[in-house]
Image 1: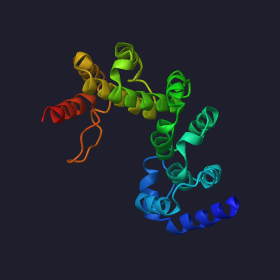
Image 2: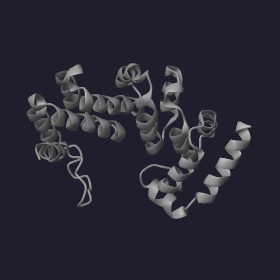
Image 3: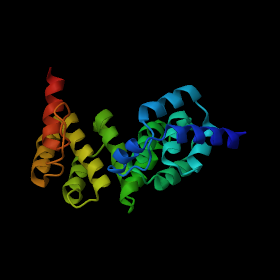
Image 4: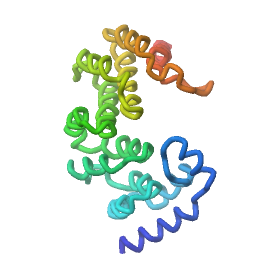
Length: 222
């Protein structure tokens, strides 16, 4: 039954394939050509179907895996399943959606966050830093922010792209969330200059930490 459903969904995703969308996505390391608005419409129609989500994930297809993160039951996965999925999610969008839409809603989130932070695989470690940035935004008092800043200061400049991005995200969140460490966060950002020249559209905030921090703090004040 599930196999037939998977086949039907895969056929539908194939019909939604757009070469122009694939070309744009390929510039960001993603190998799929399905418009994400259309993908979300498919998920909305299918609603929650956990076993179908498992089947779609097992295909290894990027569009199918993105859809799987939208129709699964995040709390149903056990720790080892999520660990294996993160290690297998090598394209940026799948990795991002898996962490944000699934892992963050699972009871093993904190345990995995701590384990992934220390993982030698930079892609896995980036998941740990993404979860840490979320913790900083919601519960900064529960973390050793000074120690996090020490690690960021020592390792972010030379980190691989995806790991560097999430470490920078955590740096900015510390500066936004905690006035005590805001000055140091800004100083680290200015000195390391990570993402300083990142291309940003006029209506978006730069990911360069000093600019990001200043913008978000100013919004909080209004």
